[in-house]
Length: 467
Image (cartoon, rainbow, N blue to C red; front, side, top):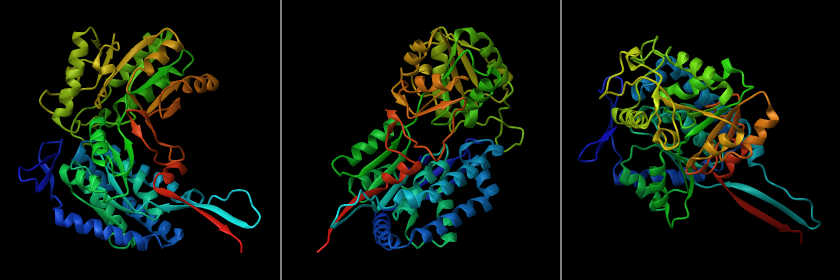
């Protein structure tokens, strides 16, 4: 992604071939002011609609995505490089999350009535916060966006959506979907914004809540822009997610799932597996099976059916991962994958071979700092205590997975892991019935589940005394 020197246009450079796949004019300040004013007035009217009407509109919008699945999947592949065979799955995930949040809107937004008190009617009502500003990332441009858009609209808010400059067409599809569904004009708008105007929206108190998914540094910029405005913030800032494989784990299952968890989407998943700790007794067998399975990936043009590993989003991102690998190698790590097995892997391009590192330690960047690319480090551990110490040795805490047949032990370990979600025998998945949240520098706030409605509404108490 780049913006021109006059900051009037954004361009999406496809990682497939470096071409400009899409370009859009950036929103001017006057256009931005009009959009905010329209959003404010549209929200007041939308708030008056019934929950049933909102649900009908949101369901029709979901159907738009399903009806245009093939076109949208191909566009995602061109924009950010995911193999096309996997892109349609994001639309399935969008539908699952959207329909779950629609289905639980009634009880999630219902009045909270305390025990009866003679002579009084008392309850707490959830009101929409007003305008929700969703700043979406490129790596899962539909899934991350739907997390906030559907509950925001179901709660009676209006939405200003800023898609990533890498995936602008995805933002436009949200507008088309809701236009086709009959959403009133102005309730959902897609804005292509410069960094300056994004910060201006937040710092000027023009919106009431910001939902942001991105890097820690960008999240800090969001917080700085919001300082003193009392604007609510939901920040999901990535992870360095660990896995712990115990001696009683199903080796075949854990290897298959953890390979997919580390390398799906070329490792560009906030909750992707970036480091693995294996009980010493199982370590050698695990590594052997893991490496063999990674060798089966097919790196290449993501538009080809046989490709299972596409390019990362841009060359600079690939260079960061290559730097981590080189630094770890210089510090004594062993690379288990011969890059020559992946003929399309070339320095100076976003195409890079997957890599598995052993003999790693926590002095290495690759085991401490987010990689967001196709690399994983594997370490043996002698005990649960050592595994817990290493799993918690990170400034990020989004998810962690435990691989065992002992659920009681998994729960006990999970209580001691500093993370937002604890998985057992699975990873890299969002269950919309559960709170999606994180700890430490992963951010703050909650999406999905009934708790996702709480941050997009405000409580109003009614205390009514009989005459």
